[in-house]
Length: 566
Image (tube, rainbow, N blue to C red):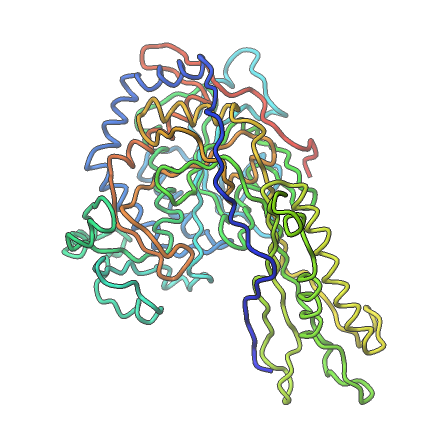
């Protein structure tokens, strides 16, 4: 048997529908705090700069220079290193305010390794004043802090390239031309952005082609615009560049929050990254499904979405299993056929196909679903073409945790049951010398969370800042679920909202080799970055330029689901 790889749909992958809810009830204190901070003269200077052409060009250049650094999940060290270097050497931060190390350690974090591997977050602190106050309260020595974040990993390339070629090309193609159909077609495009030996973008004729802003795809096509092919253009380095710009603005304007604000580029949001960056920051142990929030975050504001103007309030949970069946060396024993890795895998698939979730039986029930995503057998190990090992990847999803746990309880036993049946067919017991074996290669855990109401502090701030800044105002919030970094803080109980700050005219090819985008409205992007700053300061509190202190809207002690420090 030659290597076999196929996607098998068993059940239906969940796409949560859109629902609408009542408008969040913003308290007078939150409204007043937001408006006071917004009107402060220093903040208005910041907003003016963020909406300037100079800042827009800085963001574009930074976006292209950093996004081209290959950064697959769990191998983000090069991009993290470059962002750290810029924070200290170019953006004015003191080394003592860099809260992460090149080895992946965050002092005081409740967990340092995820899946046994280091976590390459990059975090910088905007120091607050609260810890110097008389009688300041802490959680086991950690004073309250607010997190602003966006993720730094990208799906492509899937593997970290060698040190001598760490960059991905930024190819340019007329927006009116069809999207490429193969990696070879993409590589054949001659036009691309150019960079000098220090990694800085060169503002040549190709730069002039790329750096033109449009209203939408049709506008770009009509006016001869170009799409930029670059993994991470939209998901999510456009957002993360905005998040880093928020840090730069906070530093440049000498903003003094009450609580500390941490600004992080987080690792491992994509694929097998398993939300490792957030699991480290919140001390989330996937074996127990609990987080200790040892760093004492009291509110979380994230920019991971790819839809301009979006806001995500609920988080789709999932469990993912990669199971490998392996035959013993030499598949014939005493002249009889030996158990088959392929047959064990197909037995498990058959059992999973027979499972019925509550939604399968009643369309009024919560839509909990499951998928056998990939069935993959290695190259044949013997002359007659038989593979010795086969791998099964299973994904199950639900908007809330109890049904997700229930469907896992039905599916997980099928892996072992299939193994036992295949061995028994040949008179063997699992564990015998010549029996088929099973290995859990990888386990993915994204905890589910549905808001009980829309009046927690993060939602109030998210809603009010839209009204105050005058961007992304909606009649009612969307309450559909998405799978994002926020799954972790939400499951731990920390109020969190995810929204978009990057503002392309158009983008596409997310998670594909041909991910692309076209620059869009820079002033709206500037407003959205300012809104993120305003969110963080409303939660953390703010010392105005006139000497007034705006009290923190968030509480002193962050939520957690365990006191255990692992």
